[in-house]
Image 1 (cartoon, helix red, strand yellow):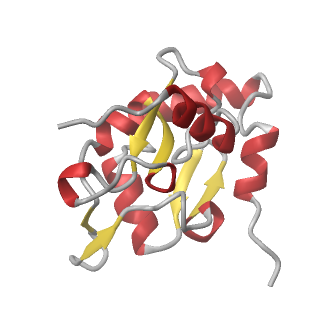
Image 2: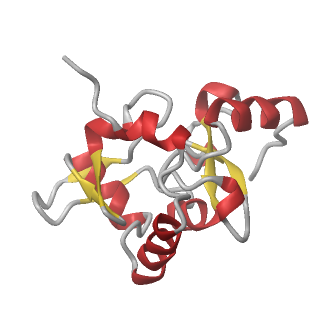
Length: 149
C-alpha cells in the first residue's frame, strides 16, 4: 500500500534535500534515473506519509532499501536500524574515502550493506564523477564534514 504524496510535499522533500540522495549523497543531476521520495519508515511499519518521514533517494538506494528499516550487521551479528536522514547526521555514520562510503557505526554498516553503497558499479560511478569534479557536490560536502565538537 502506498499513500499519495502531494506535489507540494514532493517539492518540500526535494528542496530540503538540495536535490541530493540523502543516503549516498549523489546529486540528482548525476543520476540516470533521478531521485524519488522515500518513506524513511515504511508505511507497513507504521510510517506516515508526511514530510518528517520522507526522504529524497536515488533510484538505486530507494530500490535496495525497499520497506526495510534495518539489518543484522556482520560485525556484531545484531540488528541495527538504518540511517535516518531526518534525525541522523551523515558524517556521524559514514566517511567518504575516495569513491567508497565507509560505515563508521552499526547504523552506517547496516545502511551501507543493504543500500549497496560500495557495489562495484556504484563505486565506478562515483569515481567517474570524482574525475570530473561532480562528486561530492558542494551540497554533499556540507553533510560529509563532521561537526566540530
